[in-house]
Length: 123
Image (tube, rainbow, N blue to C red):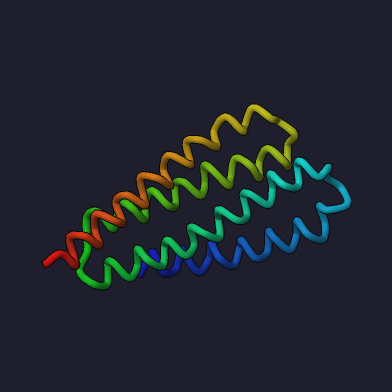
């Protein structure tokens, strides 16, 4: 199932990026930018687990809302965490303006996932 695979890949990348930040970037970045980077890693990790929940919902028979939630979690990770990583890598602070779009995608994904589970488990 694609969402479980994406969850595993995203989780592995989050570990690798977190280790990179802790070892390679810690000495090179000021603490405020390191905190921005760590926020990107943390949200990527959270949403790797969210993708596992999507995979579970789909395996229980959830389709439309669950799949849209998964797509929004992937988009949110790319927009939210990706914009923070790109901002740190390039020094272009304007990339931070993209980050809230990822946050909106995350919120939409969580709401759709809640709706999907409601539909699966309501009496």
